Length: 126
Image (cartoon, rainbow, N blue to C red; front, side, top):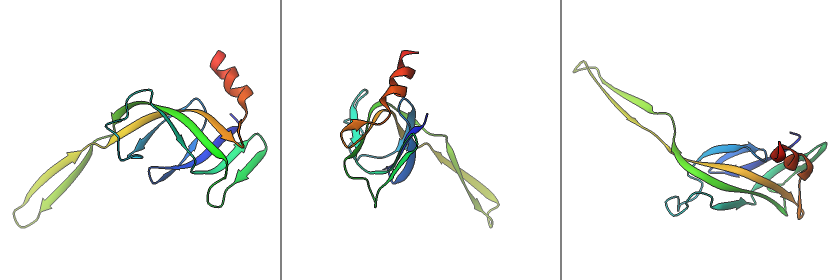
């Protein structure tokens, strides 16, 4: 697709496209209260590309909104943290998995209009 946006969510910058899903670590403090199909929107949009038009914000674009919905929560890959005791010649391994939120982007809005709505609707039909 020629339409994408770069957003700031969860302390990270993501390149998002309509119709794709993404996993984000802790983008809201009230994760437990948000259920599936909860609509979310962010106005922290850094860049929008719509075909050959590129709009860059300083730091964010005014009147730009990326809308989506939460699919479900999931876990990331397990991280193993070894701790080696050299004097005792032993090793302890602890691990944890990050809780992630999987969400899908529904639309990218700029100045009140959906960016490149034709391609998004065409992909939904097929």
